[in-house]
Length: 202
Image (cartoon, rainbow, N blue to C red):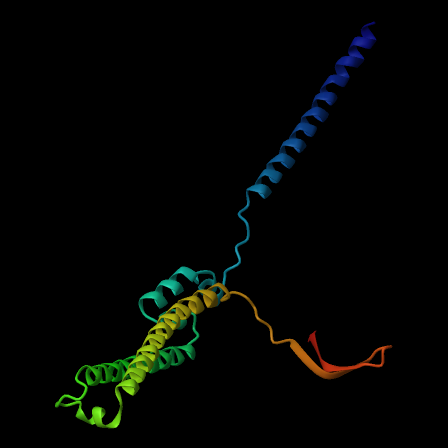
């Protein structure tokens, strides 16, 4: 009995050492795993072009072209569209002024028909029916020009908004189109001729 107690007492310190070592090993592994999880994620810096593309605003482009036509196209870096926009506006403004001026002349000429005054030239050259025709013609062309400049203004805004929304999209040039004649002879001995369009991504 004494030998058994003595044997157990001799084994207890060894058991304590092994248990302490296991706890130390477990604590160390937990500590290192916690540090590994606590490490900051690796940050990859973005290029200036990528930052500018990410910050490109469709709202800004839309508002720019709303207040100043063509400014949204400049914001979208579509500079070649600006001369087209202002050439369209200039042409339509000239058309509005010209036809409005002619409309007023023929209208005054009809109002003073056969009366002496500055419009006697039109009285001698045109009848009252012709004067009414020119009045209607210039009025219609003037109104169409006003409608055209309104439409051009709206299209300028839509174009800026669409370009801004597609600013970050990669529109590839790897697209080819093949056009070849098509001839079909069916069982009824009727022939149909046409064109076949085939698109291929490179």
